[in-house]
Length: 361
Image (cartoon, rainbow, N blue to C red; front, side, top):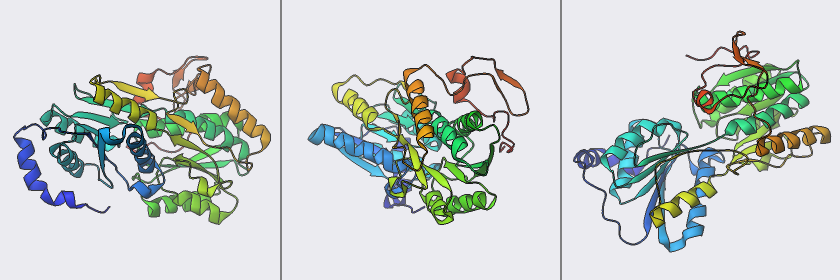
């Protein structure tokens, strides 16, 4: 990933941060900063977060001033980027990738007068809040469609990193594909990257070569869509953003992360002095997770089933992790009608029974 100019002043920034000095005094508009793990043009995860940034600009006008730093690798570079934003006087900073978590905690401790928000993480402090979306709800819908539409009975999933939010999605997709089609089998390929079009294309090509005709992903580029389009008879789903440029096929619907309402609410709280540290986990019911248009490439009866599932999840009548369910290998997990609690889901580190792929260590 391209390193940006802010990284050239590492030593100077580290020296100032180590003194524990507060950020520069805030005069005029509230300065709001963002760091993204990928480029804003990825048409996926980082793109959607930047849509949220633009939404707060439209909402609050000259009351705020925003800045983003894109393509920030997880690790030391993230800490330097966060420190840079804090030293520039940003009083509210959004860090938008799981791997930024420890960097957020380290920098937040040095800048107690700056408010930090970390996407998909679980560590908090007085000036660090967390927020996440129930992506697994959208994956359940994708799984149903995948199970109904596969002709080969082979579906594939491209994972980024084996962390709970990704494993939730794999499991939810498989559970609902299996309910729709008892003969379905799932292959999982790990890219070990959030955004790497070359790796994602290779993963999609490998799945297609293995006979997979439905591909799901928890990676951020449209490379899998392009590979599926080349193959001709493979369907895909938009990830994080709508990816509608590939509709009506191979992209037949999408799971969309809608961060704008949350960003508007939290910036408003910072402006009026009501901001507090909290944990947010929104889903279809809150609008944080949206399901993109289901195209006419999906048979009418399958579309109807998918819409019914969306409605039942949104209303709370149905939870995608409802028993009876077993862990991989047959170990008992959820009894009939038992629903998984949020604590188990947020730490999920196992596949459900029926997935034959080996869980990465």
